[in-house]
Length: 283
Ligand code: AMP
Image 1 (cartoon, rainbow, N blue to C red):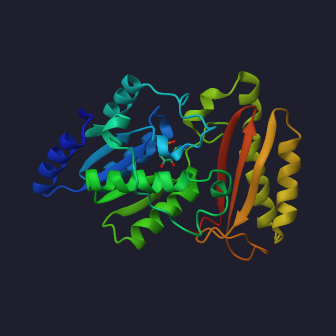
Image 2 (cartoon, rainbow, N blue to C red):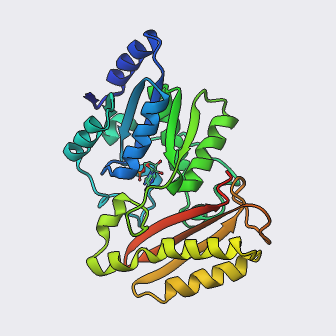
């Protein structure tokens, strides 16, 4: 496995790989890797010949009051995880490598960024789309894997690649969970022991929604009410949003017919966690 920090080195390596007729798969991450990231690496390995993992805590996707400075970082640990997952190249640039002159150019994806997290994190998805675009230009992958944990991000990146004719196949990977259902996240280490104990309520509330839908409930507000009641019954919780939307357009549903994304963002103490399920798993 190679580990590089500059764009020039990545370009040299991937052009050799391309010349040898090998396909390239990219897994963009912010590091502090866990088994969710490793499942993305596995999928990239199954569908391409050469796997690149990028590790970059991207400052332009964090709001002024968000956790950019305190976001967990541990490159040595990450390199070991990449090595054991069979990754071929790790690209972990400094901020000065990615934004040597700051940045004046941003990619704005409309509509699908308005709802859900987009409503509470202004500028976040422009920051994500812009850095992913840069990574696509640097690595020039044939395919890239994104987790459905960040469902809105996946839709934004899919739409950006379609709209801009970027020749990268974007693949969505299922959410990896802890045994008690909590979606694995780098941010879970922020949780105190007491907070960690209540955190599985998020997934439990999504499962409750699924049961209601399977039994024929069609009203988003009834489902949201039941979820709110479950989550609010636990200490440390503060709901930012629970939304029931079309899985493709991310527009609010007035009535649920055959498919829905149920997505939530909830603070547990000071830690903001997100989770979702797709009802009927049709994306
Ligand atoms: P992050 O490092 O948190 O920016 O995540 C990098 C990629 O890993 C994103 O595409 C995430 O959606 C994905 N990811 C993070 N956590 C999980 C998880 N629990 N299951 C599946 N994918 C995940």
